[in-house]
Image (cartoon, rainbow, N blue to C red; front, side):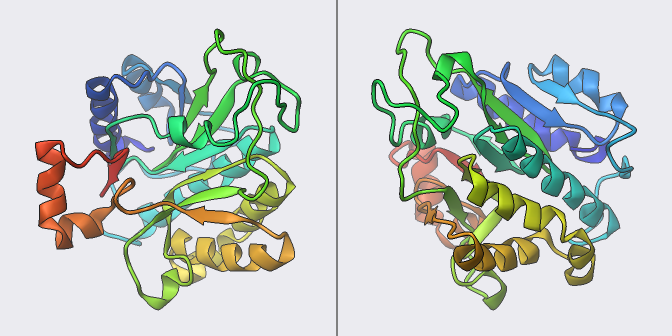
Length: 265
């Protein structure tokens, strides 16, 4: 996140506090050094490395796909690949979300059984499992429960959980997946997928959108690396399409008879 969009991260932090989700294991990729203390004051971890991180404006983007918006897409690209390269399962998200409950409870509990080991043969409580977020750029690290002593393995048929954008236009086909919230299990297939997005930054400038590159590389990954994605439901992981076109659902969140994990505007 950059200085101009720090209010969105503050709103996300407030939702975590309200929902009882700890932020001590969240890592924020910052666009400048001046917001590092502010992010840490909200309870998250923060990282900024001037020699490595590309310069981005401290201003908020004026409109969708303007220069500030596109420059921040670099943070969305390299952060995911970096965490996967280090062997961390990765949850990436923008900052224009609020959480009602921790989505890691869903992703990381799929395929967990006593005595089973993951690809690095690490216990959950002995190795930080990571996710990454962004708007770019918040990573979450989940240490797990030391009392459970469960080993983690992901289900053999799933490499990725993708959120449904709700749009049904051509550029989102065939999965209609949103590039602002998704979970990847760390393996060669997902690392290759993230690498193909990161190394396509020049193409991102031509197409004008990280979403376009995400969709293109996702389709290619199905064939080239045999990537195995699953699509999350809009009812559990709603986005702006629900706000604009499903008022009963939005009232249901207020009335608490709809209980999604989060809301992504």
